Length: 412
Image (spheres, rainbow, N blue to C red):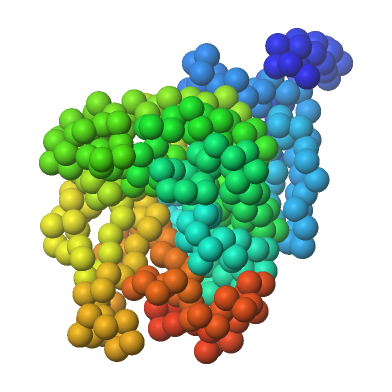
């Protein structure tokens, strides 16, 4: 039903109900969850904004869907908000960026930890885009969130492909991860995984419009709209260097506000993550120049052995200024390994400083990545490729993956 007619129909039902009930609560027609998730302020502040076309404020029926783990709920009207009663999402509910932290429905800091999938177009990553892998991450790896990395472009065989079949395959892989996260009641970061998202803004509108319409009623969803902005690459239409301080103001922030507007047409509630300049390191540049949306956090990425005190200082400056920071990707560089040799194991001290930064600042953190590719941040051994259902043994998991299981378990 078109939003306009839904609004008229809902208004009519609402008036009938008011006259029949004689004194029912004025907010009874909002169609929000039965629990207090802290979003009353958001809806009150935005009731007349004109930017939110979601029919939550116009629906006269509180038709909420409560469910347990085991199956994805059947599709419901977008006016409904799914209420989750178990698992990590049941514990935390809809996440909100408030006062420089990611806050859950109970007003407590939510410190999500989890794993990122590898690029959806790479053979070493796409084979693991299965429900079984997500179940293993949730149950064995203690992940409270999983990140679905939609490869876009200019890399081959991504969502930007001219081949509609290839494009659809990438979308289906991401939706497989989303559905499995909902099944297991963990959060899912829906990641537009490109360095040049501004070159693909038409696809960003298309993709996030589709995802927010299909999944926006689920509190599991976190939108990550630009993986690592890179404004100086030869394949990018933009030629700002990493040292140019205008990249955030001129390109990233305007892009973010346009794409967020598309998301908010369908989903007024769920958290949005915005990448920052220079491979999502310069979160400090957001201070005093935030995106105009009430539920946004800003992305910081780093790799142990490559990034050090300078990058931590940038992050700490943002945190101290009350900017909500979300580490949606972190991992190991080759210098984190003994003798810079992947076979030699990780230097023990490598696990100290950056993990302490996460703990001390109560940050959400998603580690890179679920792959057996021969690279420093791979969590899986080559033998894991024979088990794409996630039924791995200890021998299939590398040291980095084993350490992450213990690190994630701190939150359980």
